[in-house]
Image 1 (tube, helix red, strand yellow):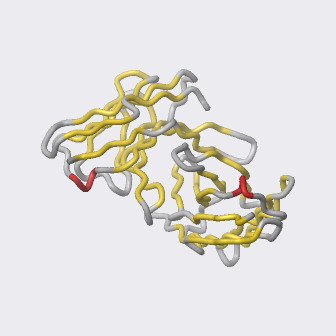
Image 2 (tube, chains in turn cyan, brown):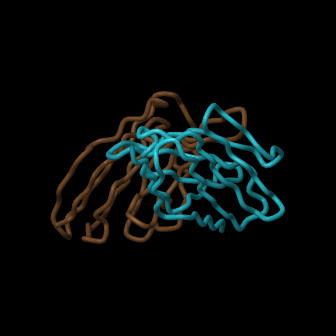
Image 3 (cartoon, helix red, strand yellow):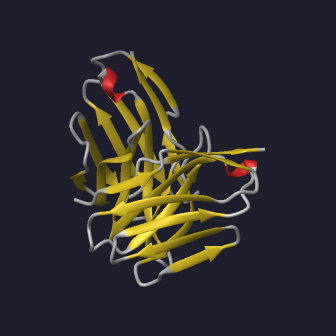
Length: 110
Length: 114
């Protein structure tokens, strides 16, 4: 089955700096790659997603890039703010089978 | 929130007792899932359902069973709870969006087995 690896497990940045989280996947048939943000005590919530036929997608301060050949994708957050502090999960799916990375705890220091 | 309700939200139970978690959805989604979340492991799929009475195992199904007798309800049962099953359990549904089939989560059920 699909295996998703996520790095780093923890990331600390200064407010205003950029943050990058990277994921790799194993199944070349995976074609959909969402990212979730989970605040403490809350459910994971979708923040951005990308299909395999798209190389990059941007939504305000967040962007996702996908390299199908290398089977890796990344989340980029620019101009980080304290409210960006959370755990972020990447995922890879084909059809209705979605597998998640282990998560990255992002801390944005004011 | 995709109309997902989990109950109970918090439960403490003793080792060896049976526990059932309930997931209820109001939007008639075909696919429903149970995930568990543990530090360092992310979200791992326990079981999923693709219709009434149609269920299948995920990657960590040992010690768990599920049932789906109605489209709107998906039950997760721990037949004899163990301390290793202390976790946060998330129910989820799959919903088609422009980019693909996206998972939406319920609010979670915190289970402690003592």
